[in-house]
Length: 635
View (tube, one colour):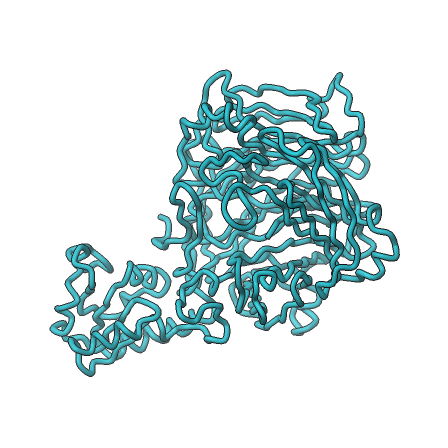
């Protein structure tokens, strides 16, 4: 059963995360909350004043049944008679007759409420969520504690074990919105949820970059090898409540290299887009408990997409702990291109998975499977207004070197079929080939192979990009949440990288609900601000930019690549132009000369800016023996 906490909301036009569960479950607040419950239980009966179901959220984490309840009360007349914490809710006017030893106000910013309660309860001790607050010096908005800007938190997978390392790279984008003293508070947990280290990291000036490398963390704190969760909290920020980062995994063995990104900070009910293992592969799902409570055994489950049964994971996960779940062991005999569905119950953030094959490993992530989304009858009728409409763009890497395969993945519980066509476009935006895939069933195993698509078709520059679009010639439904896994195999080394993402409407002035999405502000999203992290030498950095367009937009992009040093200084800039509907594959060393690269130094980044159109990008690192690829983030 899913946790009874509110983590993410959708109102039809937009989607947004909530912050009460983050405030209650914060690693700094959790021990204070446990001590508070023990104190109240020792004193005697507790009368709870519930505010916006806050007591149920608190009880989920800290079990108020340890306290003898004198009753649950509310200020809202319409809530009288509801059942909360197993009790029938009474009016707050009755709270003084409850005979409670403690009044517990289930809310933050409760000072005024407490003052008013004194009329009813006299000198009875009153406690509230304010007893577990974080320091005011951490807060972006001290006047409203649960402001999302106060809880810009996220989790990262961090491993320093067996010759495997991880590096988190991000930028100070908050100072670009006016933050003057932002910083990060970090807390590292091992697999058992034991706190290994906590520390503060100052952020560089606006646009500057920060790297947190597992090797350096281990050395800094004298730690043993570890695999676990890094909790990241951005402090004193403005403009953007999401902690975004690129996460590179690398190893002492040069064949270990992969890229993924931020974990999505709001635990979901379900995740999808988890590939079943191919023959000779092991697929490990890394589950990182996001809460200060144990995930009970048999709460997490895996099932085959489109199937009716799920298999429960029989192991408990400790608070803030990390566990490796072997997908093949839970579902023996299920093989790629089957895909799996994860029952998560709001216990953990978007999980990463790791695939081992012939001594090589690669890492990617599953995606949030929506529970609130149904097929939208308007989408099939929108073609006259939106042209291609929703587009899912993915790189087609140079075909002589890389084999590209794509697997469409259902990403909503209400999605029964997917009417899809696949398009291959060259760098100039010309359609090379198109194929209607049919009305794919939810549990389909239709793998798109670029080699087969291009048989008999020329690709002049050797690369381009692939688009998945809706095609309703055989009917079917659409919800705008089309996703796919894109897998790339190096024909020379055998190394594989993979990534996944979802469709959007791109580059049209016509707005449909929250599309075209923008990195800042509301739709239409018609500009670009992408962050490209640059790998340390001797690794080369590559970037694949696509200019997808639902309808014809500017004939060419007007794109600037700004080379930014780690301290936020712009060192150099270059202009590139991408054809509408086309793409550009480039490498750091090919665009910026040795002098510029030397001035930029270690920890540099490239900011990709375009005020005329929205580009979509993928980035990766390249060595002689391996490469990585994942989609980029913007801010």
